[in-house]
Amino acid sequence: MTEKRRLSRRELLQIGGVVAIGYGVSVVLSATAPLGIDVSTNAIAQGLVLDPGGPIEGPEHADLRVVVFTDYQCPACRRAAPELDGAMRDDGRTQVAYKDWPIFGDVSEQAAQVALASEPQGLYFKIHHALMREHRALTEPVLRAIVEREGGDWTRLASDLQAGQTRIQTALARTATQAFALGISGTPAFLIGPLLVKGALSRSEFAKAFSDARAKLSR
Image (tube, rainbow, N blue to C red; front, side, top):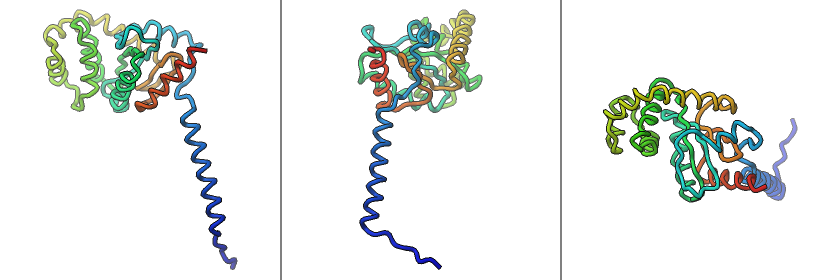
C-alpha cells in the first residue's frame, strides 16, 4: 500500500499562489471582455438604433442610444430595469427606446397594449416603469389601477386602445420581426449602440457596456 505524502507548507503556498493568479486573471478578463456582440456592421441593428420606431426616453443631447426588447412579465426584465435606469442617470448622455415584445402570453400582450395605448395621454414612460415595478399579476383591474394611479383616464385609454388597435398590433408585430432578424430569442435584450447584449445586466455592467459602445463608435 502506497503511503500518501503530505504537502509541505511551501508547496501549499505555491499552489495557493497559482490559484490566486488564476483568479486574478479571471477577474481581469471578465472586467475587460466585451459584454455584447459587435453588430456595428449589421444594417438591421444600426437602422433600429437610428430609428427605433417607438417611445424614446432620455436627454436630447445624448450620444448613445439603447434599444430594449422587453416583456412586462419577464422576471429578468424586471430585474434589469432599475439597473438600466440607474446606469442612465449616472451616465447622463444615453437615451433608451423601448420595444414592447410580449412573449409571456396573453397577460403580457394585454399589458403591452395598455402601455402603447397610453401614448396619446403622454403616459407611456410612467406606465412602462410602473408595470416594471409591479409584482402583482397584471390583470385588467391591476392595469386600470396603475393607469389611474399614474394620472391616466382609463375610459379614454380603452377608447384609444380600440381605435388604435391596428397601429398597436402592427408595432408589436414589427418588434417581433426585428427581434427574430437579430437572432434574439428571449427578453431582455439590449442594442447598445453597436453592441447587442442578451440577458440582464447589473448597473455597473450597463456602465461598462456604455463605455465599450462609445469606444467602438469613436474608432
